[in-house]
Structure formats: structure tokens, C-alpha cells
Image (cartoon, rainbow, N blue to C red; front, side):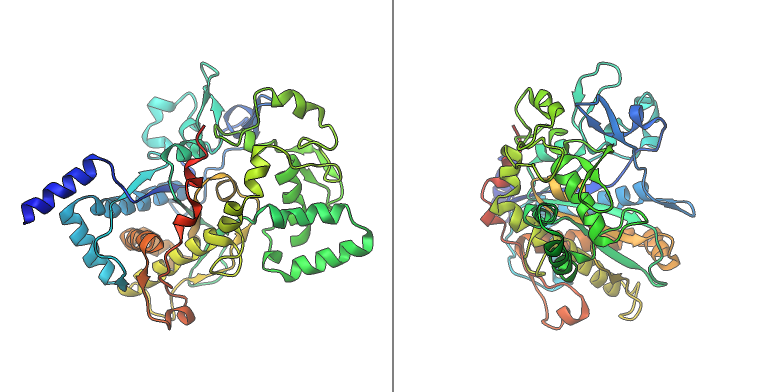
Length: 443
């Protein structure tokens, strides 16, 4: 009987019959090099140069973010690969039982990929002419041939995942015992409020502002000083629609702050047709390339995508009341981290890192990845307790993420009291509702 089971499982794997695909996406990997126009990120096809510096990630007291999250991702991958063998599945099921009551014992294998290899310093001799090449988010030209290469987002789309788990660390010392955050972006229908604002009378603008600040999106990420949350929302909405920053008032573009038509910086199905650059340079009013929200018109495949029900499901409402499946997936994985820290006696209920308000902005991965995006800030490395957690308990974070990923796919029954304690809810995401949407991004 055992032999038959082994044969069946071998056939299952040989035919690549996987139920789900997840990409683990450890952030950063490269380094900051000047000038950004040569070694940066966000290569713009209109300007033929990079429009943003490469961001190497956080550093504190000997700890590099890009190295730590890569190690956590590797450990998580190893645990999830247990689902691909019969002996491994038994071991994985025993692990699941330590976190609740799995709703399915006979689950199918989970295919798991990493979005990048190890950081630049481990492969320096191979990539020394352009150390950021393997780590850029956006597509970029080869430094020798000029041929366009896939960045992280385009590579992720080739795996056709249902779920992308992006791992980051940060700095900021919000408290003394540690914290975690989700990173999310709203859908087209929230950004559209900026268009309404620009096209409204002064009196109506006050009403729009007041309603927005009272909403769940009101705690918008402040990119810098000198603007409040609503003013930064307006600025990000201008970037989202036109590629330009806005002035502080949110009523005019800042032509010197151009960030490009980002959806055309990837090799995917929602890129505008060949020759779009010629139209874009003219910025004609009442087209999708207008440089002003008063005359912007959302036309083309990308804007059809943005207005679709699938993007609403990913980025609006959902189990958490807002943020869609992206926010639920992010918060649920962070809740599993809290449970793992308790299970391994790293923390007590009083010392657990808190899950703080999500960082909300027009972030690249939650916007452009065609999958449910669980984007996590796992710790603040300038907080001593968080620093020690990451330094000594990477395996605990990896275990939590692996179990949480299973739970997002299949569900793990949890006590009702968990919701009050900010511990896992155990609800699976209804991935079937997306149909073939997640596979549609590849041209």
C-alpha cells in the first residue's frame, strides 16, 4: 500500500500537478551607486535613463536588510518544499497541527520560487559591471548590449503565481518592543477621488478631503516633510495617473518631478501597443497620456485592468474591511509570525511585536504584480528586541510564513478568541474567484 502511495505521488510530481504557486520575494539585493541615471532603477523608455536611485534597503548595527530577508525566504522555501514529497507532507502536516486544525490533510503540492538569488556581494565578479542588474524591480537595458532584460516584477509574472510574499525590514523605532507593518495600495476607484478633487469647486474639495481623511485610507504614507497625508495621497494619485508629482495643492503637475508611465516599464500583457512613446511625448489632453488630471482619460488595457473586479478584490474591501485580499494576506502572515514567536517562547503575549497601521502609497509590487500581494515589513532593526529576533530566530519567521502561506491557500481552523489577540484568523482566500486572471499577465 505504501509503495502504491509513493508511485502515485511520484506521478503527481512528474506531471507538475501543483495546486498553487507562491513566489517569495526578498527585497532589495543591490547597492546604491551614483549616478542613478546609469545604475538606478525605473528605466524610462521616453527618457532612456533611470529615473530613480536603486534602494539598497535598511542597515543598522551590522545588519543588512537585503541579506536577512533573503535568508528568511530561503528557509521558508525549504519548509514549503516539504509539500512536494510524501515524507515531507507528513512532516509538514505535523507542523501545521501545532498551529491549529488544518482543514485538509490531503492537500496538493505547493510550487515555490524565489524572486532573486543572493545579494550583490556574493556574486560580485559575475555582475561587477552592473551590480544592480539582477535586483531591479523594473525592466532595464543590458549595460553592454542595450537589450531589455526582465526586472523582478516581470520575472515574477513568468512564474504565474497566485500569491507573492514580499519580505522587508525597516527602521524607525515606533516603540521599544518591536513592530510589523503591511504595505498596500488602493485600487483605481480610490485614486479616482483625486481626479474628482481636481475637477471640483473649492467647496466640494473640502468635502472630498474630509471624507477621505475619515476613511481607512486617510493614514496615507508621508514620503517626506512639508505635506500632510491627503496632500501625499494627491501626489501619489498624480504619479499613478500621469507619471508626474503634483504641487502641494494637488491641483497642478510638477514637470520637473517625472516618474514615468510605470505600467510600460514591464514586459506584460498590459503594456501599451508598440509606438506608444510617440503619443506619450505629446501629452495630448483627453488621452491616457495627458499630463493633467483635468484632461486625463483612462484608456487602454492597463486601465481596463485597473478598473476590473479582480483589482477591486485584490486592493479594496475584503476580510479586513479595506485593502482587499492583499491586506488580509499581509496581516494574516504577520499574525502567524506573532503566533510562532509565542509557540517558540521567544515572546510572551505582553512582549509580542505589534501589527501597526499599514504603509499606504502607490507602491510598485502591490500595484503591478498580477497576484495577491502579501508585502511585509517584518521588523524594525533599530529596535533592540526586533534586531535580536531577526538575528537569532530567522527559522521562527520562516516557519510562520510557511504555515501562513498554507493557511491562505487551504485554511487552518483557529479559536475565535484569536481575533481579539491579533493572532491568526485561519481563513483561506477564495483564489478560485480570480479564474485565469493571475495567468493573464504574460504576453
